[in-house]
Length: 67
Image (cartoon, rainbow, N blue to C red):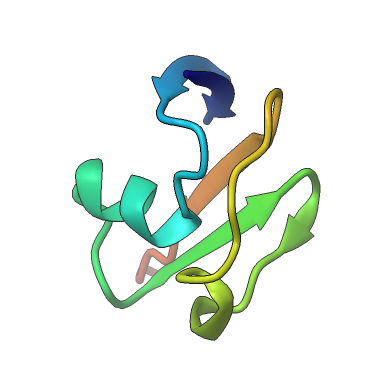
């Protein structure tokens, strides 16, 4: 298992888990969401190939409409 941080909460994930798998597991919607990995935004097209390493810090940001 590998420990990663998702919005400042630690999570244990299997070694080799992809960003796409983690987002699907946590029900992150397909649209209106950006993910930063260790401070850098990861393009959605790359989610399936980005493997999470020990100590990775992820921030999930959701777009909100309003005025």
